Length: 576
Image (cartoon, rainbow, N blue to C red; front, side, top):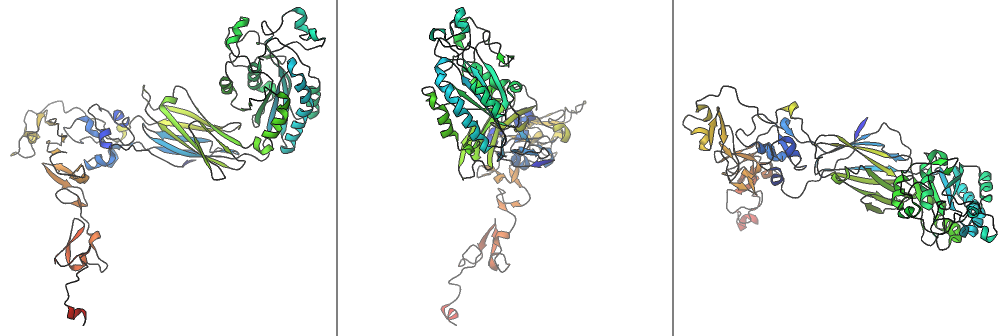
């Protein structure tokens, strides 16, 4: 079932006639590409003798010039909603849009978060030697955090993984004794350095989570930065291994006391193979840590982890001992964890330059937030997003191929698929020919067929008779057209910048008015309705209706309906 939702068409402020009239226009497609205000007349004998570009104009202009409604090519911008797909959090789920160059369409998306939304939290912990105190705190505070979250969600699960750094020189000491125990100089037994180890898949068994936390031991490396980006990527792309549930909100809590290495420093270890962004876990250990370059910036990671919620605080690196307390203080109460409704737009890079998107959120508290790519609204209630999509131009290669765009609230397992139909072509073959076909094979030699009357000159003296058809002359003053070149748009009077007031055609230098209009310039309405007084008489019975206004017969009378005449009666009559 398709429902018409809402259509918003933007018409630019400059003149439609100026935009649609160009001698370079030779086809219907050329015309439509000029802008949403341009239409094409495919009527077979429309404007005989005029240049083909005269078939392009605004809808009102084409009507005035005699194009029948059935032959006006004017694709409408429209939005259709597929209401057959069920939704629990995001609706609608599927939208079809028809756009033409310069047009825009608007639709509304409703986002409703569930009260008991399922949540998956994965602890990703730096276990380098400097994290000893923080690891000890995690064994108590981490469990407290998990219990507190469980109090607010009946469907909460937790997982755990650890990282240090790439286990190659110069990031770690490669002496054989240091490889087995990086902390041998301190008479402390540490575990070997590792890029990433997936320790505990996401589970609701808090007893197992407690046991895993208690068993964790520190490791060691040589330099200050750590290998956090490698671990973050594996923790997010290894969906099945980690156990991320598709229907849950994904939270990745990274705990470290130092920044992460970037991509270029992988060359220090002779690692130059670009990372492929895929999962490489073997027996829950990241197997490509010594062969693939690190990710360079968090934005690249975000591209791979669109369904993971990432937090970062600049002061955590300085005092990670406060990380749990800060997390508890700033993220909780729990409703704040589920209150961020962030909408993101996905469009192919190759298509993005031709489209623009604007998003406005209407929050339950009455506030609005706008943005070009995403907006943020704080609420656990329903949030409405108004999304406006515009198309600046058609693809260079032409065609009406569809473009897919995704609209997705971050962290939700539901999204909206928007199919954009680019109306860059015409259906002229269904309603008439886009161009007049060639004339008959045998061309008549007489010129009388090119005269309106035997006494009239050939093609009204403003064209040449070729193959029995008038080909009108070109004029810098305007357009000459008609079967006998008897019509133009410059030899008749203009009213408000429009020939014949926009309500008629100029034929042989005289205005021929459309039904409902009269006068030499077709600027007078034929109807006398505006001149009827309350008593049902034209101009109160004291005048005539001329061009929609009363002209009083008696000069002493005045008023819009000739109803006023203070001196028509003598003083005796007024005091009778």
